[in-house]
Length: 209
Image (cartoon, rainbow, N blue to C red; front, side, top):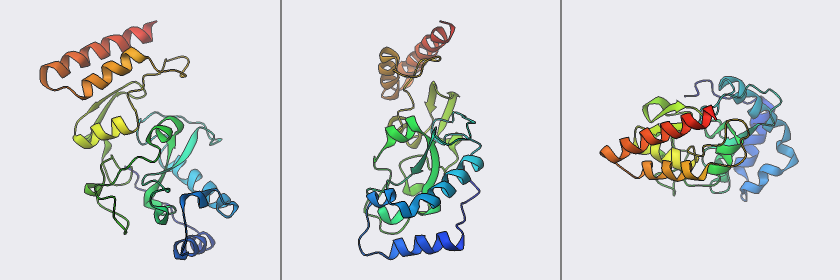
């Protein structure tokens, strides 16, 4: 859970206030040059307070140049541009999780017009409001995750955490393992435990190979 919230400078806050007051705004405004400096502020802040850890897959990447990190709008800026610069709607995420999540819906009530501030307002594990370990057990970050709640399961599916890239060259997913993981997500009881055991066995063999 992110505890150190971003605080804008006076000039940055003026920019944020001006944007919120615009009658017309959309997610494409994010690409405007006026937001270049504030983007750097956002990325630099959250990289550090998150300890260079993706809030969804929990993979640690200590690169400081920033190219491996995307600024993540937890509620997509394209669907709710008014929340585009809200600090509690921002963090950084790895490019894989950010790309998989994309503009997918994360709100229990997508018609909300005020910013939701409770964990119960979200279908996804929220980096600011939820304790990750209550919803997902990252058995091997980057490889294997076990959902502990329905919210954890939704996050695993939405961010495609069961993508199982190769350990050496993370370019293409292992299709058989990926399909096995999807089957595990939709199963219950003894069948789920069998699939989990098979997943662990295949991942272990893949690492050895």
